[in-house]
Image (cartoon, rainbow, N blue to C red):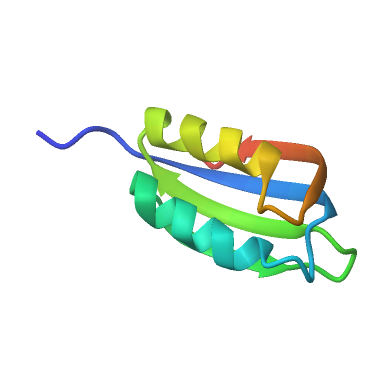
Amino acid sequence: MEPLTEMWHIRVDGKVQGVWFRKHTLETALQVGIRGWVRNEQDGSVAIAAEGTKDQLDAFVLWCKRGSPLANVHNVRVTVAE
């Protein structure tokens, strides 16, 4: 029996564009087993749709709060998709 997965929508605010944030997000997602997508938004934030187990998603969100080495994350908002 496969573990239950959830879909979370994550919005990351701060200095997260132009600092390789999306590349590091992809690498981190692959490391923890997350599927989904990541994109830059016009307001300067980064939007992420992430699917995985609760433990995988929790670990991923912890990484999002730190971000890539050059990023300066101010806020991370998480919404659980229905």
